Image (cartoon, rainbow over all chains, first blue to last red; front, top):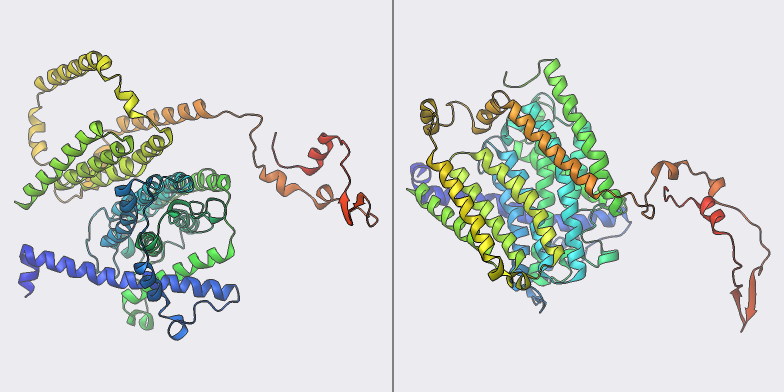
Length: 338
Length: 231
């Protein structure tokens, strides 16, 4: 049996398929319950009850919503570019899924343990903008196009400072492999020595995922719903799922880069009994809660403030911190792999 | 075997999409085919074992350059049918330039000779025991550091050039002066007036209407308000 799965081509294909399912099915259930959690958390912060009718505590609400979406009619605007219009949500959703191939959920539990894992993630997350631009253009609608323009400028801007944060972390690790990044945090999580970068990365992650206070691409108060204003039923649901899966992905990335991935907070007895994958999920949940907390707390940024924050605050700050980190590593001889 | 099949699949898609870039009627489709071509080139790099280059190709070209291309092409609203109208007229010039370029390329490639030491290096480009990224880093920051820095300097010049060309500090543009906003005091901003009830209104038709405003000096108002225009 082991021989079949590891040494034959067909066996490897089946094994990879099973691995992908084992990762994606929990992820999609997680995404479904993230929408529920968002509504419950927002409700609690605004002294409301939130969804509480469908099932105990409203727990079946995500499935009710999904079924409703499936039943609805898919409307394609007559002036739209039909092929690209349908491709955009699929692209958004697929990109949010393929990125999970390199995420290590525990020591050795990873789909593809590639050497350039962090670059792969960065590449995939920088492609997320295409789904939005194509949707905005193919809809042939002013509001959708404005949303797409905003989103393109925003995501390209925040990627730059995000890249510098990644370089800073990589300097401390000496490897582009995500598992190595987690192992390098065995003594201390990177959120302690690189605290300013942790904050910059988290805020950039909010901007990358188009979450409030940076949700200008959908800004419902001025451009209705932005890039997905023309979408309905399943095509809308795919955008929705893609956005929430991206939130999961960014939380996982924050966890891996700064919060020690699958590592227990203290490397002592009661903490190490709990398996690494549980720690990983718990940390993702904490980061996701902060995503929701931010949404309930902050008003939306104005467009020029958004650009100013990205280019005039985060870029110099992350560049400066990169130089400081490199200098400190050199001066104290802390460079890895030497 | 599988590698060879994959290579031919990716290479075929690459060539077809490259041809589509120049032949597609819609410029947005052209850019999307260009992106597809980038992807397949990245896949070919992966097959060649150059994983770092593959990822950098996707990040830089697909993630940044092509986004800006797409952005511009969508904004410009180019009418390609009109552009194609001049095809016959520009054909001789275009063909001449193409032929000259082709001859030059052929001349360079025909006279291409490899140094004896380099032939072995081409067969095994990566030193053993090193990952692709490390191997690149070792030559890039040691043997080729001058070229690396020069490339960086050229990019810097291009960036400053773009800023100089586009930055126009117009007097009419509105800026937010955060320091000025923070420095504002309540006393400068708010003026508490005690007005008698109904002052400044006229009664007509059972309702109170505000009186017509008198012509007032605008400068004074703008100074006191401090709208944060900066200029």
